[in-house]
Each structure stands twice: as structure tokens, then as C-alpha cells.
Length: 402
Image (cartoon, rainbow, N blue to C red; front, side):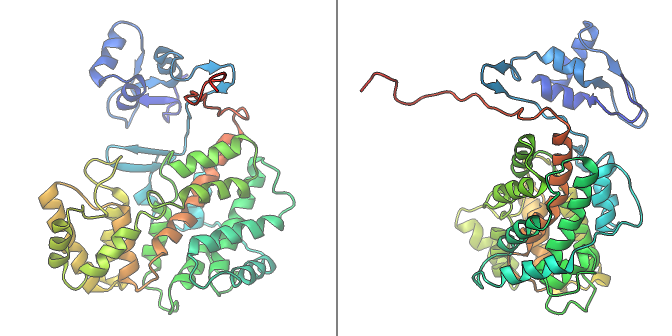
């Protein structure tokens, strides 16, 4: 069944990727009667029914075995297409000017409301703060987030209810609780205000709030990244939301995922005063300049583009020296290597431009991604349980060889 809004339909590029062929071959399948093409208003080119494409693809890449199945994941949450990022069909950049709570609720439910408020229990927030005071003073913010998630879960006896209404309610309270626990402000603040109070020593200056809000919205989800897949695997076992989020936090805690902005921050430390000299040193070492290019985007990262645009606006109070240095780096690297700044570069620049702690990008990434993880957990709770079981190929010592 064709939906006017494009649900359950694949673009030509998506169909080609699923079938492992060129777009021209997809149209050859249409001419041979193997696929049916459809046109949708507002969508360039043809679209194809996902079930028809899957049938043509055959069962060789998603076949059942005697020990389980390898599944292809269908999702209605995030689309990355032609250099744009969409949440449920809406451009994420356009959504980034809206309240973080409203966007989170939209990503979870498909309802875009103006007035959405998440409420934290002040007692639970205080318990989380007391617990995080026991850790090493050098621990990272993501460690504090993990602790807050675990402690908050113990105060939610109904967390095992995986119905959508309950999960949405729990997710809103979890976000508000974690954000408030990171700082020392009132538990009545919005998520963005709580995060700003946690990362900015003089949080009374609101200049960076608009940029922070955009950053949290734009980092909320990015499709089936490693951490998101971990969340879906946990949710498939019917782990509760807090446990599923913990699975995501475990996956995100690595230099190739949540900590990818660290080398950018270290590079900017050297580059702020002398960007050309820092670039020359980096190139002489044979190392690439961190924070450029992306495995998915080919010519622009829309998240970085929007955050850097906001940072350049004097009304948002970012340090002009930092922005000037960042722009010099972007111009030199982009023109020499035909590449573009990514979200890691933008988050590191944001961190420097407001004088924040070096682990701020990782903290913002982890907190924002709770939104996407919740949405994917909600989808997975509606699927058959325990559907992920990858059949391993044993290559060890054969029995009887000793």
C-alpha cells in the first residue's frame, strides 16, 4: 500500500543500495516487471514499496538459521538524504530552532507540540548529585551521566513497562533528571538551561543558549550508529528504557564514536593563536586534520554547517578570536583537500568559543542521543523480541585435534 507521506517507500538510491546495484539497474528491474515504481508529491524521482524491494533482494542477506536471524532494521525516525538530515520527514536544521523538549517529543511520537515540559523529581536529582560527588574529581561528564541514569532507574519501579505511553513519560523525566544532576541549578529548569548551568561557570549569561539548543537537537539522532544498534539489541530483549540507554552509553564511550571530538579539541588548542602554523605542523607530522569529512555525507555536514552559522552570529556571544581561527582552518583545509567540517569540529569550536570544559562535546553528544535511543527503543519494543542473533562462523581449534 502506497502512503501519501512516503511511509514504507524507498527512494531510487535507497532501493539501489538495498539491492546492491546501480540506480540504472533499478529502473531496468521496473522495465522487466520486477519492481513497481511510484511517484510522490514533493519527492524527486521514483519510489518503491519496501516489501517489494525486500522480496527482490531475496533472503540471502536476511536468512533464518537454526540459531536465529539476522534482521534488516526498518525505521521511521531518521533519514539522511542528499546532504540533509531529517527527523520523521522534517528537516533537522529547521527543527533546531525549536525547544529541545518539543523536538524530543516529536522524535518519540510524531507530534510536534509547542509546549512540552519534562519534570525531574528533586529528590532523585539530589541523590544523583550526591552519588557523582563520590567519584574522582577528574572523571568525565559521560561517567556522571551513566551514574545518574543508573540511580534514576532505581527510583522508577514501573520502568519495566515498555508500552509507548510509559516509555515516553520515563524518557522525559530521565532527560530532565540527568541534565539537572549534572549541574547545581534548580530541577525546574528546562533541559537546555540545566545543561548550560552545568557547562558554563557564569550561566547567568544566556548568549550561548540558542547554539546549545541547536546542538542538542542536531545531535539527537543519526540513524543506526553503533550505539543506536546497541540500544535496539537491548530493547529486543525487552530491557527497560534505562538499561537500553545504558547500553547506548557503553557503545558511545569510545574514541571513534562519542569521543571523536577530542582530537579536534586538542588541535584547536594549538590552532587558536596561530591556525596556519598549527595546520603546517599537523601536515608535517603526516596526520590528517581532525574534524573534517564524514563516512555518510559527501560534501557537507548539515549539523556542522548550522552550528557554525550560529557561532558566527555576534548576537550569540561566541569568542570572535576562536571563530576567526576556526574559519581560517575551514577555508584552508576545505580548499586544499576538497572536504568539509563535520559535527565534531563544530562541537569542539562551540566548546572553545564559550570557554567550556574539554569533554563538553562528548557530554552533549551522549545527552542528546538519549532522544534518538528512546525513539529506536520504542520502535524495537513493537518488533518481535529477540530478533537479533548473528550466526557466528567458528574458526577455532577443531574438536578431536588434541
